[in-house]
Figure (cartoon, rainbow, N blue to C red):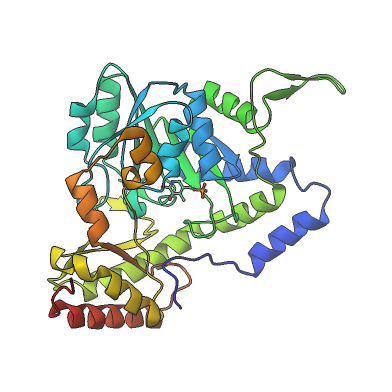
Length: 375
Ligand SMILES: *Cc1c(COP(=O)(O)O)cnc(C)c1O
């Protein structure tokens, strides 16, 4: 099975981890700081604070910028649930902004959703394609809102040569196994704000500061959301390869783009020439006539060894959200969910793998194109 995404771990990654295992510090040593410095120098952000997941990083980010009960957060439904779960856990309310056909939130709809209660705009760079950064930042500035970018897909992406991580007030990264680089589990908040960075470090580690000798003081409520030295060492090693991972995924994506250029049964996510996408995912947006056949197509692709996935069920369609926020339906997001299928695109793939995926995908799709719906 060729998975839709997977990690690439090589001997030097293993060596970096083993070195930590043989040393004195498995946690709270120098590797975490080294990883944070490397993230800053790669992205151009002033501060990087690493966490044990993007989910805890999101909770940290929302907490230190003081998102609280009854605040309204304008956000995208086309994401992993953690993006909104973490501000909902602080009592804030999601205000869903519909998306565009590229999977990113439609920045043209944001202004209409703003009320006196709006506190922040939280976007996701879907599949690695950067948001319309300057347009969203302008709206945020005009209405005095925070702009938070859940860039869990997008480490390595850039706009006009400027890397993700330097556009929003805070940018969240994920180092989960299948994300652009991995530490197994892990995440980070990037920000230029000194105060937030300081508070994020406290939030990550019990809110405690060291005083003299044995004395420490707990100055705020915190958690244990620390990343281990083992994970940080893997992160340092992986970050050195990010550029080559992005290059490989872009090669696969460019090959698909070429193969699919004349296809009439679906569209793909287009990346404008002023942007680079990490190509974390390669989303296919099937025409409506395939909606009723998507389950069959999905099943057959898996049977043929192609590990497809669907990104995402709109967050508001989950039971928890229906229960707490009622039934919501947004046209483009709902249709996108019916249409989308992500085919394999990752740094472990060969050209042969990509040809096999494209051939098999087209063959199966064409087979189903002249079958009616089996209601
Ligand atoms: C993966 C992902 C997360 C959660 O990341 P973890 O590191 O697994 O906690 C959050 N948001 C988005 C958009 C993601 O893709």
